[in-house]
Length: 315
Image (cartoon, rainbow, N blue to C red; front, side, top):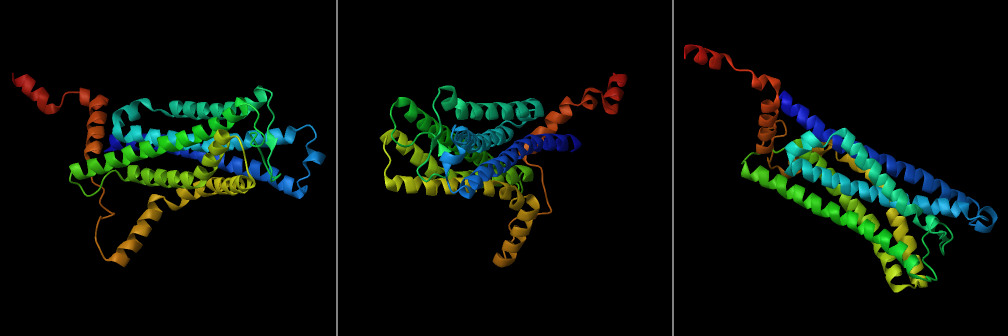
């Protein structure tokens, strides 16, 4: 059991490291983008006065792209990590170390930075949008394929991250349910179910908040025009997307195991149905496989037992 507890702590540590990165990214995105937006509103949207060299707009645009894509990427990486942890637990416990997780975090952040810097590297400036409250890729008077490329790249990467999250979470959930019913046990791996519930909530929040904005940006990139209705639509979609950074931390606050237990007890009192005993945490087949693998790899398993020594002496 102690060996399994080490596996469990190691499995959960990688998920919590990614979750910490997501929460920190959301926090900084909310603070930086919010501070610039407040400054713009406080200056009465007079960009000519405080943005003569277009530096502030470029910084605002880079932050919008980076803090928009990075949480979506981290959410998909978390879904992939949990999928590997459930479907390949031995591989995950032995190969997915904290060093590898930190490396994945670094790669994700660097890739998001690269996408955000693409217009600057190609000498294309970020554009003040029609509402004069934020900056982004060029969405008006699109001239050539490069302007369309940035818009389509942003929407494609965002939708791809959401698709990967949906696929991996579906595989993980189906695998957990299959193991639970196949082993005919009343309780599966509690920490896996806790993390899957959090991931599903993150995915739902991201899809609801980001899908309108990503679809609108893709539509502008494809159609190459923007009407007045589209301007109002993209501003509304942007406000929905900003809610993602606010709601993500609450997913971890409200969907912890202790909170879920209390919600379950309240629901059980209301329904009057006994489904699962929360005080019984039995070993599932995946637990047993991890326990056997841990015991077989431990130094104690390589030493002969007393019974084996007596039998060899008798022979």
